Image (tube, rainbow, N blue to C red; front, side, top):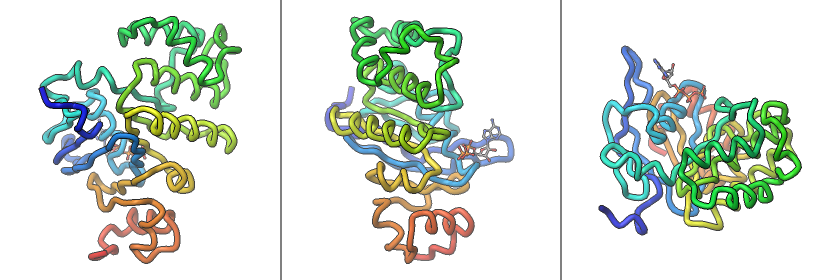
Amino acid sequence: MPDSSSSPVLAVRELCKTYAGTVAVDGISFEVGRNEIVGLLGPNGAGKTTTINMVLGVLEPTSGSIHIQGVDLEKHRSQALERTNFAAVYAPLPGNLTVVQNLRYFGLIYGVKHVSERIETLLNEFDLVRFRDTKSGVLSSGEQTRVALAKAMLNQPQLLLLDEPTASLDPATAKDIRARIRDFAAQGTGGVLWTSHNMYEVEEVCDRVLFMSRGKVLLQGDPRKLPQEHGKATLEELFITVAREPLALGNH
Ligand SMILES: Nc1ncnc2c1ncn2[C@@H]1O[C@H](COP(=O)(O)OP(=O)(O)OP(=O)(O)O)[C@@H](O)[C@H]1O
């Protein structure tokens, strides 16, 4: 087994996914390092969710490889996925279960040791103590996002995948969520792969961004430096250029 302590939390090589007639992901390679937050950006249909679903082991790649902490997802699936987790607005937790029931349910699925203790820690960390016996489905979007993040932290992931975690949140709540995710990346040894359509957020949170369009990674770098490197005033302007006219970037 490889020495996982020196490997990046995620290494994706030449990853492809094709459906009949559609190339959703077209040979992308990238890494997520320890303590790093990497933003996966791109217009609708670029291939971001397909990429995340392959890293989660939900979708089988057509070709290419995925290593999580040096462990090959295809060959050692359980071991690769045991320190991975995920949150997305389109994957809400069962709304008829209370917050504690949800956390207990997922804690058991993940085989979390000392699960009651872990749940109490997370209820405190994500400011959910007062909602512990409230059904998740009646909580506000921001509160549900906090529950989803608490669930995603149950197994102390090394790789955290977040698909638009702050979509539909008000600015103050979104800021609070960003701070919690930054803390996660800063404190442990884990890394985060984060999709977002909010360029302000990406500049604030991400150490590095990957721009995807039509299944390919067209450019990557520091979101605070990339616009200037490509002669654009803002990340949003660069994003629109890459999304509309991928070839317009020339040899920059
Ligand atoms: N099951 C499927 N069968 C056929 N085509 C699919 C399937 N799933 C995704 N696609 C296609 O693959 C491409 C990439 O889709 P994907 O959902 O990964 O994009 P995305 O970047 O996440 O977009 P968005 O920002 O809208 O969420 C799209 O053209 C989509 O229509």
